[in-house]
Amino acid sequence: MINTSDLEHTPSHALLVFVGHADDAKQQAEWVRETQSVLQEELTRRIEHYYCQLTTVDIYLWESHAPRTFGGQKLIDAAIDRANMAIFVFRDRVGKVTWEELQRFKQIREEGIPIIAVFPDGPSSLEVNRDLEKSEAWTDLLRKKMSLEKTGRNMVPNH
Image (cartoon, rainbow, N blue to C red; front, side, top):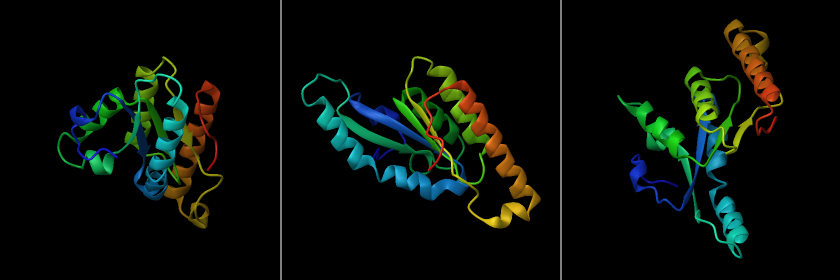
């Protein structure tokens, strides 16, 4: 994992995986971070007999690399510009900024770099049936999921 918020210290041979998520999906983002060693093993295995510039896997999570301080979004935008792939994980809602990051990634990455969006099968609790705000957030999540499915981008529909 990247140990600094300064992307200039990220080696050019690192496959940078940007992980985007709203506050309610922190645990799911951590699960992605925990796959780093598996991803590294797979990358190493695949490039064993082929030349590839990318030899290490680094996971970028905004909580670790762009704390909520003035200018933090600039660090996140720099990571989006540098990333080789993105994984967006959702739970019960799609955060406004997270959705903007996903859209930004799509706009600047038309050359086919993978964007994976992972959505749950259903809401995490029955509160969505009793709380109007949670119900609206869940409905918004479903609409955004459907809009991504229509674009045909690389996406994993459920987790």
